[in-house]
Length: 336
Ligand code: DAH
Image (cartoon, rainbow, N blue to C red; front, side, top):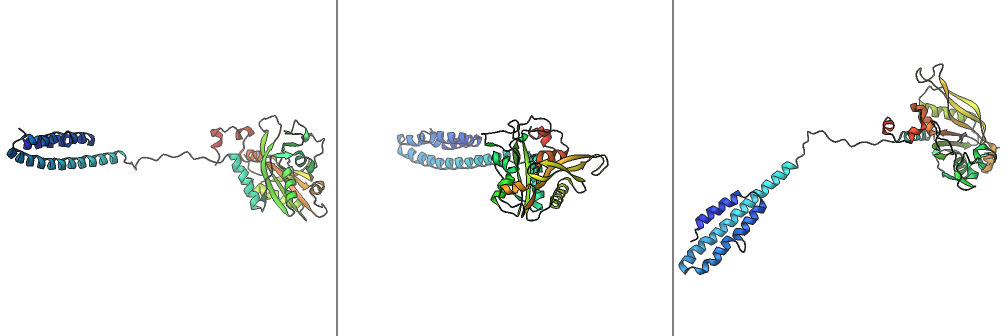
């Protein structure tokens, strides 16, 4: 004989002991499901005599309603516990130290490159860029570099065809610049240049140059000197002693080299410092002006070309040009 009170007690206890939603659902199915215990009892009522059926039927039906609400209550409890637990697990400990992402930095060569560009931009220069693959004419001929000049030798220059090459300097951009725009011109032209060179501590077969060109109606050598002295003070700090010494480039006349007095231990201007070459410069050769259709009786100008690696090596006392290319973090992390 079925005792609804005992059944209630028994099931209530089972429900309260269940510890997960899955278990609870299983239990619920085994009691109230299609083949569940209580469902079976309700089904078997028909076999009982009418009086008994009435009483037990009513009891079992109200037990069913009660059980449903027990299950629901326990389900809520378990659900709440589950949420509490997952909140607990996912809690962020705000007192823990944070994780610092590794910060990148500009390559030292790019830093100096940009610094030089900024210096000239602040002096009113524009930036102009030309191609790295260049015609022999722009790299040599238009710059007044004669066919028998040693720079034209295939051992100094990477030729692509006999008329086309990897530019050996940024000076061909002077020609391109003057062909494209009429004076007044005041521009710098940065970029990579290539030389068929034995690599050593101070020579690479690819490096960065910045060319400068000023062309107008009455520029003089004094403008060249003033501009480059300002540039030196912007890059190396004020008070550096500079010296212009005569030099030779086919595309400038007169030509000069700019030297600065270098003595780290004893200070900028100390006696006994070394004079170090910073760049080549000069007044644009009349033939170069003629080559781009400018009348040297009307126009004059000055030009200069510097190696960015060289400036960076001077500025930071770097003994080895190859360090710029080796990507050794111990070196790179010292800058910026
Ligand atoms: N193009 C020269 C070189 O690569 C550097 C140079 C010297 C550029 C004098 C100039 C200049 O514009 O006036 O060695």
